[in-house]
Image (tube, rainbow, N blue to C red; front, side, top):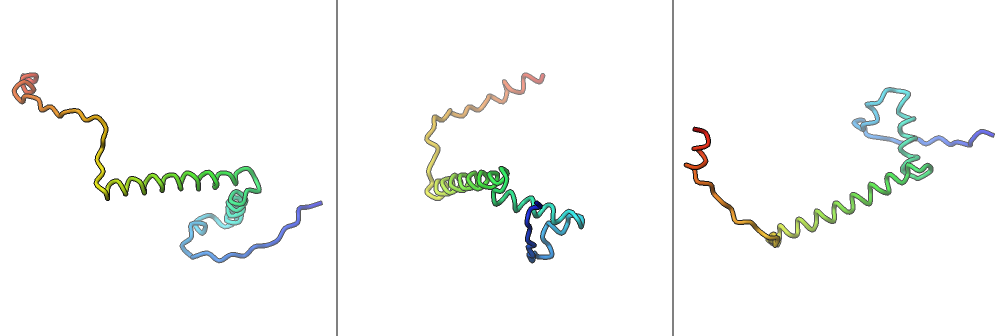
Length: 94
């Protein structure tokens, strides 16, 4: 017995990227994305994983912004800057 299907009609802005696809490919691509998004296939986990990674990146960015805002400094070990003697440096090119 064939799989039962229903039709879905959606409205998208005229500048939506799907309109750049060739006619005949749009429904196929939209169906693949919808199936991946709703987990009908294992690919659905891709969106869950991407969402988790995005949340982690946003959290790290928020911490970085807070550090910049509060003026927190790097507390790691700092090396003292050394400035080479210009005469010694230039003598290597003589």
